[in-house]
Length: 431
Ligand code: S3P
Image (cartoon, rainbow, N blue to C red; front, side):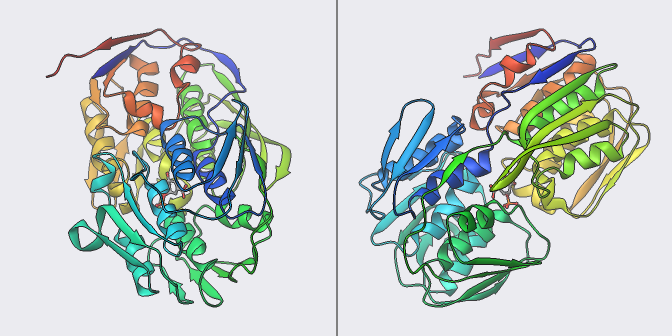
């Protein structure tokens, strides 16, 4: 197992043009290419484990993929029954969206994942899919991967979801495109909307009215996708927190999607006192631009709304909370418990190990700002926990173990971090 030690940072001023490309959009770009009537072209695709697994799955489903290292060209003449088991690795997005795509395809498909993904709940997609005729089976009463899907005819639906989840929404929108009538999907709070934007851009009949999305089944294949994937705000956010907690520091984060369902954590950090500005530079499928973050004194905040807009950034935001004056509160965030780790426990345990006072609730936690102490933190195989505590180390030094997970979303994280502080890597002999 790998381990890293980071040293306390001095003030820095950094302009970053190569934050990792967006994971959500990268997954979708290769999957949606399977629905197009010609060659899709994707540039700045995230070459990280999660999204490369999706690309591999698309190949196993018969797509023709030409990759010159810059542009990935994908064409498909329909989903083919694969010879291989489809391995989503660590990715819940991959598994849940492929369920929607494959439920109506001809053939039999097995989806599996790593030891972490095989423990994450899939009933949230298998239940609504089964209710419209999908033939899916899995361990634990159709909840835990591996999942077996036999493509079937799907009935039209009006589904009201109890959770604000873009993964569930996207899964059902993909199923709706092949259902036998007009479908609608309603969510309790708007979740990220890349699927709706991208499919509309490809010509699908997807109409969003507040929390309700109405989808007409595809009569024909869609137009190919031609997309440059913007940088990932969730990855960029680690460097936003780095600047916000390091005295006299500034970072410019270039080419980030400014989609409002994705930058809520930056807004929260701004409400805490950080000096943040946004500069729109492009608008195709998504608004895209630069975000500048300057350090300023931080104060406590309560986060209880639009949780799905900052769910992935809460671990890193909690590090900013630990450096703020006062007690911050996170509520209505039970979804954190079913991410790559139980992020309520991993955040609270990690902060406690660093000497920060916290309280844990079923649906959230409190963090009382104070002096962060150096500690050794195990990521529990969760990339966002690993990177959050490495960033905390910029205040006080830190050792973090179980780092391979960082490759699932942000392969050049350390290369960028090296511009801020000293890092030493080592191997741990555990077994
Ligand atoms: C994602 C949606 C979110 C997010 C995940 C990526 C997506 O999950 O946490 O990292 O790409 O649709 P939920 O929609 O399940 O909350």
